[in-house]
Amino acid sequence: MSQINVDIVNPETGTSLTLNGDLITQITNAPMLATDNTGEIYSPYQIATVNMTSADILSMGATPIELLPAPGANNYYDIQYIIFEFTKNSTQYVYTDAPVVWIGSSEFAILNENLIKGLAPYKMVKVTPGPLAVNIDGNATWSATYLLDSNVYITSLNGANPTTGNGTMRAIICYRNVTFGTL
Image (tube, rainbow, N blue to C red):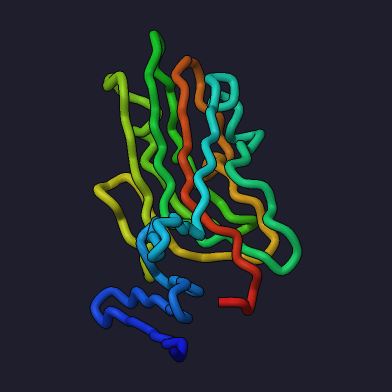
């Protein structure tokens, strides 16, 4: 019996799947998880979680908070989404700047400063990539710019630190490390 090789492409989503015999050898632009015929789960993406204390947030204009370290020479991060969860404690932040996610020296996403200030005890924003800069529900702008060998971090747009406040924030990043020229 001969082995069958198949490429399946969904023209509406761009999702493609390459089968060599009975093994999945490549998944492109796919959902986060897929299974092959043996039931093995395949995911090219990883999840990183970064917890930010009140002290981290109070100094983030002067001391950026690293979300992902540099991926290594000739590599970059393909980020599927970042979720920011903010928990307000007893004192709200006074903040006149905007939190910004950077990849190296490239501005990646601008978050609304209301994420870390205001009266709501819990807030969440999910940033997802798009081909152009977009505004997501007034909360984030995503430019989808990737730089080789660059860490991902959050800081203030104009370098200002929040004053007062004692809330915490968590970032959940879904990403994969890609070697340039291998997709």
